[in-house]
Image 1: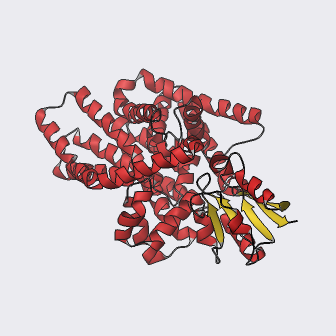
Image 2 (image 1 turned 90 degrees about the vertical axis):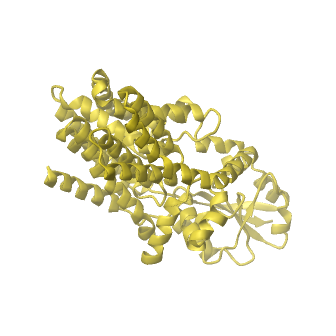
Image 3 (image 1 turned 120 degrees about the vertical axis):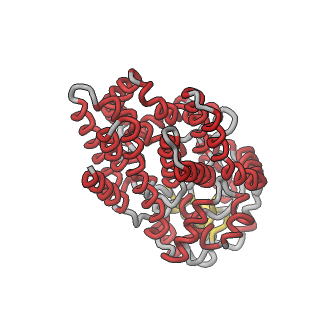
Length: 467
């Protein structure tokens, strides 16, 4: 089985290293600018209050880039590593809960999951938080049976890693408490369990002023741009259905919608069968069901009050999803053939993303290069956002773009009064300027649209000339 697991890890790493040199998209550029432009202390004092995440990933990325540089590959390699490290942890969980075969097949599915591959290639914290949660679950299982001091220590450390990597994965902790109550653990175990939370509690206490500033900033942002709530993720049937769809298909979609729906329906059958059979034997894998359901429900309910229910933010429950599917299929007739079918679908969906550029990230590298080469010094580049888009800042050698913070600032005339031509970005306009105030203002100043240039993910860049 060791050779099999090693082969699975090699396959998982190979998938995660394929097409890794894509352009950074907006959130990745935020990470890149943060670690390049701030010291370790500055990441806390200057950057963090305006961000929406804890600092651990940025610290890791800062340390990494000081050694390996700031190329797209270098910026993404930490996530690749955390994504690959999750594979053996999932194997260990499956082995401990339901035996060697469940561990191996669960590891195989997480290794080839299109969604996990995608976020293992992203210079963000989601692969890290998924690894941290998986590690916490594994050592939680270990401390449930003949725990050693080392197990308690690593469990405590993994809880700290969870809280320091992202906020939403903390919703896994109530699942652990529920499991402890269900098992009716004795007082000595509870005492050790509570003590294991102390490093996390200390961190959260020290981090609380930053978290409060982040929350206030998010609230003010949503008041200014209410449509942004849909990006963060609301408590809706659409958001919930996307969790199911993206867990199965990854970040790809097909046209027309009827074809996409048909593919989702066919692909869902194997997963429904696995989960249904797993539910019939839920007592043997209650901890995994709790890992899947408790954070999902709490995140959905929480999104009624604070938007944040998005499938990618729930990546940390994806291992539980696969563990339950494999467990439900492993003992039924033709179960291994169905697991093989899921594995084949994973390879197809992951391969569709990796080898089809249409599914790649936003191509800011090409778009900004186009603008830098084409735009003249007296031709403003306008975008509606509180600040110049982070990937524009990252890739531009000129950084001559101007951000217009609508609806707070409509004084566009001053920016274009001495110009005979200008460029505008459509990127995020549906969220930041749904009424197209920018276009109305520059038309009023005598400009007319002459050309439109499109770039993958970035959308349209418009060229305007004063008539």
